[in-house]
Image 1: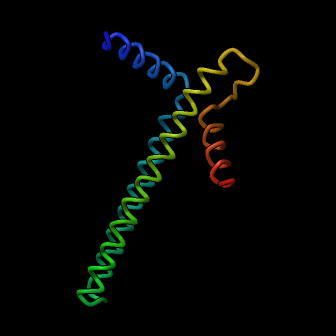
Image 2: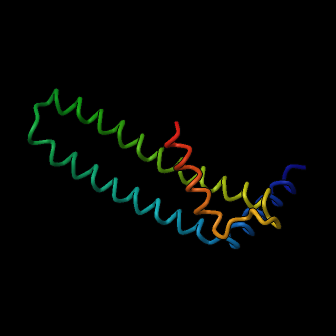
Length: 118
């Protein structure tokens, strides 16, 4: 019973992603940002080691691990929210005059504007 429903959901999502390839571009940009953050984080961890005592290094490493996890989750949530907005835009606005030309960019702009209001 659930398998046909999931198959239809996957078929629909693949169709939307093929119709709006900017969603794939957003994923690649997110991966590049995450890779850059990982390199920066690793470099910071390596540079920090000879400059601090053992206790200070332990505290800083814990802080760095928390900041690494938090940043990765924020990037992941931005991408997830943007993709959800693309699907919602497609579902509710297809065939109307309100359909944006680039729903991925419109969804990302909505996300950013909501974050600045909060």
